[in-house]
Image (cartoon, rainbow, N blue to C red):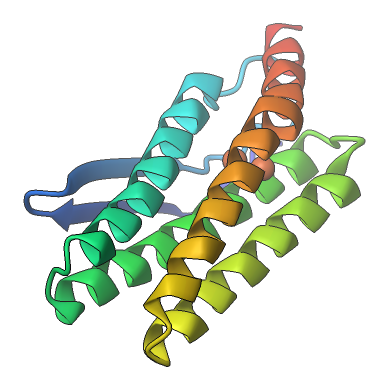
Length: 160
Ligand SMILES: [Fe+2]
Ligand SMILES: [Fe+2]
């Protein structure tokens, strides 16, 4: 059985900062031996996530206009939301055994993002940067451990 799901695109355009294009195709292949989910595209998304976190901090440090900083922050939050959601969907589709712990990490990072947004919108830019740095450490740790483990699992599942 092939489950037909949605296809959607997110195109992030941030002139002079970061241009990223993300394409996520969720044509579920639950019982097909070879899927279309390329772990390399997940890695690319991680680079975008880190790039946006860095861009956010740099823009604050360079005292750029608030509207631009807010725009980057909003895109970072939306992008992360969709990224976490898409990973979780894939984990469910492939019955990933470490799902719960992995989701806990995503929730912790979503908390960081909410904190960053709260700090930034209440004129606490320093606090926002500090939380962004903490989030970056957490995110890199997550990518190198849990995301890597899932990526290995996905490759294995798709090659059998
Ligand atoms: Fe990830
Ligand atoms: Fe993850």
